[in-house]
Image 1 (cartoon, protein in one colour):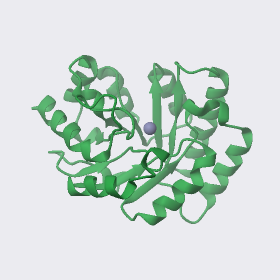
Image 2: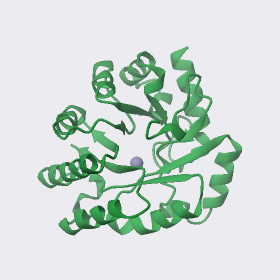
Image 3: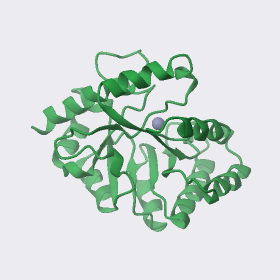
Image 4: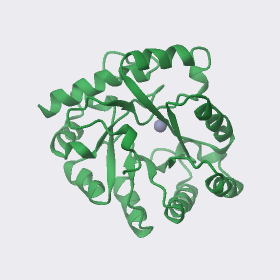
Length: 245
Ligand SMILES: [Zn+2]
């Protein structure tokens, strides 16, 4: 059984599960249950909530324990690179040694548009090595870094994970699929201008795709400037069906 079996959308993309949503973020503190109920009513059956920084992990783990349709991951996200310290690696190892392990390491990665590139590399490589040591998949954030990240992942022999918010060419998509990765398909495909990504998503095998919203971020077309939410996974699914028809 694959690590993300509860999140696989199936050949016709009829099984809805949000494989990437930040539902623990404070943006949802006032109405989290309403948002969840709206998503469930729309047919979304599971939620995978990734970690982004060490001071957020405990609350995330508690929330994931509270909702039985949540899974969670733990990681140090490049957006918060200035918040990460060496001691976080020790904490992460402790978390991974605990009884109830997270489903994956994530959200981790490299982002060429934020600073501290050397420290980003250290933090990313450390987490990829931890994933390899624990046999865990990784949830990868990328921005202009797909190829350099693939080299690091290959060197660590990590052969399971997902490229969150995949955007890139068909050749890049297949290189990651060959490495054992899924491609996360989100709101970006609802925009006509995302031609290269839409073409790649159209041509790759259906079983390599995972649906995701990245709530509260990455709004679908027509909802720019609004908080995103998992109920809108239906729109991403419909756009995907349209693209692949
Ligand atoms: Zn994210």
